[in-house]
Length: 639
Figure 1 (tube, rainbow, N blue to C red):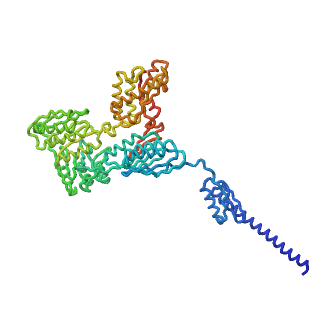
Figure 2 (spheres, rainbow, N blue to C red; figure 1 turned 90 degrees about the vertical axis):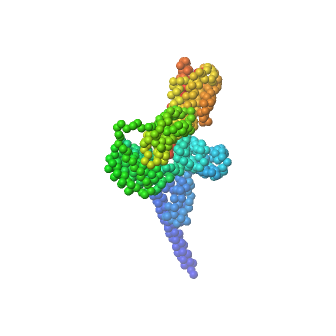
């Protein structure tokens, strides 16, 4: 073959190869540009403008600083929708997140008869050993199971406040679940009775520190009501309950609806409890209440399945017969109805014998009126001395003949009912028993009605006029910490606590003032109080500080000697460091020499009323002005 032919063939192949390379390069460029443009456009649509996209052949490279790991992963997912995910090369980085929020620290404290369990996440800076030591003491020999994790992140000051409150609350709650977060504590516990439930709620409410919100859920078993009692009256056109019991919420709604239809106004409630004689209790009560309304007045009393319906004096006999007949036919078979139509008043009727027992506010009981025999007189006197203080009972009752056979039962039952009152009177007559007065027990009327219905029998007439006073309630009547300090301030505004010059000994009037302050604090229960001692600027500073501390200690010791519980009190001497007036005049120095009672920071209300509170069934808040608290309780001293 000729040489020229060989060169021609080789040239042809070379030109073809060059053309193929150019075509392939162009195709690759088109593919890369298309992949880069398409992926970048899709990422921009998703708001990921921080991404950088490049392509090398079939591979697509993603670069840039992702705001978070989740954003980085999402960018890879978006690119994988455009090109094969295997072709996507991740070269992205995640930004440093110095401002990442710390984890939510929380602790679940579970306590039962076997011990205490701790579950949750706590800050690494927390003294874990001290917490476990507190739990061990609270467990009283039970096991303490530590399932806590820790994280090294900062936590707010309200975390320590919440933990401290939870530990204190745990000491009173043998079976509970306490959930703790910064600034919040949730308590779920059980009580053995409704009375214990009230006490627990009142105690937990009084100990809420500032800037802490708590919720309390205390469950208690339904009370056993014996006898199962309901008493509804309409007197002088006014409808009211003396007692109301129901077995279910539905029965309660049915009874209250019937009462409102009969004219009841204002708030009313029924105790839901155990011991109902029949599931038809709600229906029977509603029918009987409607019957009283039809009669235009009177009363109806349920004691288990026995019903006493007493019409108002002057009710027409025809109306009485119609209403009673209709009620008898409508009542469930289990109930027995006893109805009474009182006779009209008769002018010139003989005097009605009576027995009267009076309980005064200071606990003195006076018994007067008639008893049937000397033996009954002695029994009444002994019963009263056993029920009340023996030294405060004065008997002036006289022996008389011709009294009803059930007179002893009526008299002793009246005395027993009087024991539900703080002060009041019971009047016993042959046809009626009337009790009136004041009480600190919310359920006193219901308890009295149940007692009288059970002891006096069917058809017995009795009137109950008992008023609940919150200040007489041993639980609800306890003043708040703020009220306690305010009452002390009122005393100190007119009567100064003075000391002998240069001494921690009280002057002649000091004992009397301390007696009054101790009376107030004795009613306040456990509150956090600081007793601060202050002096004027005369003398050496160190000596003034020591003297103020001794005087504060003297006040604390004086309260202890008067049996005030002072375990939560502190005494601190400030010397001349906190004057409230100038020391250049005698009046100013006199003002600076003082003792201050103030709530400590743990119990002191926060300035912002929205910053603290208590959530329970009624969600009560703790609020106040911290600066005003610092000034409360100031009283003068003498150096």
